[in-house]
Image 1 (cartoon, one colour):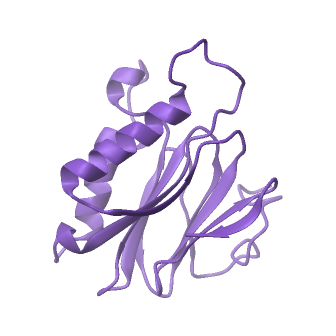
Image 2 (tube, one colour; image 1 turned 120 degrees about the vertical axis):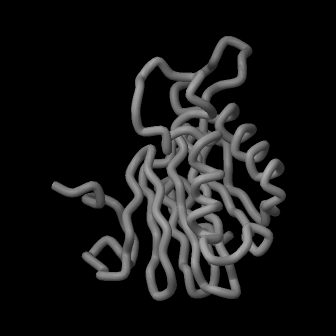
Length: 172
């Protein structure tokens, strides 16, 4: 069984151009690659893209910052670490000013949160804060709700496709 079993998409059949980003990971690629991250629940997927170079990256954010966890290791799972790192890696040899962002995820997956902002909402807020700090424009988002999503970034056009069992396919 693979991480893609049960996931529907053109890359699920073993597309050689697909780069899969696991939970708490990030990846950078160039056209003709497609970068995919499945299982975004309260996690947030962030796609950064440089149109001039047809280069981009995708991060699967689990938590806003290291202060939100007692577990050591895998710093890329935190928005405050992963987003600046992803921006630098995508812009390598160029400039961050050319990047644009699209995000997805940040759901409330397991019911109420007692009046406090849930982890999905806190992830969305920190992702947006990090983008503002880096002055990277957020062009589109599909966030919130109570459903899981799969996100894919097509590096030829910057198109982000969000798939969910509940709502089908959305293009960002």
